Image (cartoon, rainbow, N blue to C red; front, top):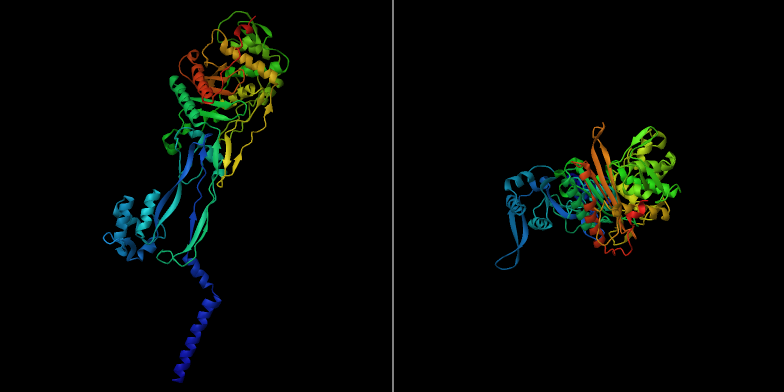
Length: 582
């Protein structure tokens, strides 16, 4: 008995010592290991910030959705489970028991899925598997009320684009994993992305939360709302007009840009065949992105106003300087002619620009040295990115003046031998409309933080390219283009307008020779105090190039812009075309 008693005491002492080691001293960190095994960390996803237009209309937003998941190993250990329900007869709360199959059948009904498929996905030894993906909050609530052990709704965010293709290339999109691939979604990803939070709790082996254990929550911080300068309604209108231009002339593509002259704000940046970010796969790969900022074309005669402005700024000419323009011009061994047949004519510089004469432009522009004109082109922004916050922007093509060949040294004076994006060309006219100060195109109005704090984006400092006096002279010449007697296509009732057409050969896609033409018109209004610039470019219109015009489309878009922004009609007389001839 003594030996037995001593043996029993030794065993009890060993057990007590072990308990002290485990529960008191925890030499092997077993308590922590047990807690770690019970601890579940659930991510609380931050909501990605919205993208809205200048009036607060939502262009992109994230909505809460749920994936229904299962811990198969937890569910496998459950034979039946119970949940509290209201007795329909008595109205009392009662506990009702269900088998796992009964619970899965109820789950299949809520999810509108086949029971066999639900059971197959729920059966196994995996710690994680999907039952259903992307269900609504209402469905998630119904799933949670079933109380099936091992079934977990998992919150996710889904990006949606309420306006579809309106502004699609500007807004951009995310891939299936939430990675930004285009537009503002890509360039402003840091601001749009929030900081995820987390909820930490403890659960038993069956996956059911231990009610007495503490729950720690670190709330998520949602992403910032990005407010654009774009006007949703005008963007839609411009896109429709661009699509109409493309289809009317069976062109490769068309682009329309609307700029607020004094601020550089982009009111609309429209491409034909704009894609829908909700269904990017439905669009051709070539249409992903904005051709307005990525495609380069020869600007053609729209560049003549840049040549005229440089001459005036350097004191080498005035709008009324006279030239004797021959039918064809031979200079430096190069021959130049015009798009219309004429004899030897006396023309002012303004008259040369009004009739878009290559011969006269070369005669006048040759007074500028190659380096002088190259420097003016650079100051006007040719050959460099505008800095618009969109991916894929091209700087265009401008060779150094020292590399210009015997013909290019003259063709750059009328917009050939140089390539620009439609946006770059429009910003040249913004410079002239803004008294000679070139601004960076602004696309972001402000950022709104999750706490409601708003950070306004300051206007970037401008670059003075020409003096206000020179800019006014250039505007007078542009107004002469649209008021001359044989070109009355451009006409916005009640407003003085000015602008310039441009036509150039389009290089073939294979890089060998030319294939078709690029046709454009860039204009501004009202000329007594320019508020807006509208640039229109059509690539490779079919048919005779002389039957192509962007004038009527300019009238429609500019008229809509002026009326929408309550711009007062002009009150001063237009520049008369007769002024530009002898």
